[in-house]
Image 1: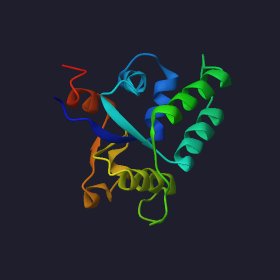
Image 2 (image 1 turned 180 degrees about the vertical axis):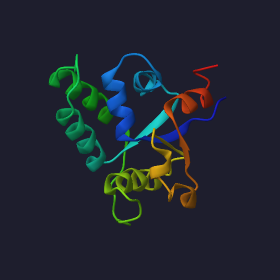
Image 3 (image 1 turned 135 degrees about the vertical axis):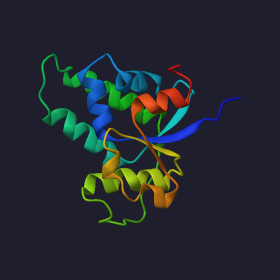
Image 4 (image 1 turned 180 degrees about the horizontal axis):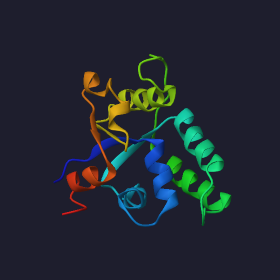
Length: 143
């Protein structure tokens, strides 16, 4: 039986998944809720996903209804965590602190991000940093 990892997804991975149906970010998004890993969330993190998705502009952007449906599904199947403490500031970007807080509160093993250098505090909490491709390889979705 394979280990089921608890992960938190950085907002840059979420936006990459919305921007293109190709690539590891989109594949990761399609695997949420399929029993291969558990995604951890907090209200502030979901609101961040939503705010960036609304703000960003790109060609062939999904409709707001589609983005809302994706967020609703992630909220339905994700592991929700209340953050009772704030360690901020820890990272250079306060939004990265939010991801770190969810990872610690959710006892996650991995933060999936394209910006590993932005999480200097992760190793102090026993967290591994992986790109979407690295994580998919770890769970055996990419040979």
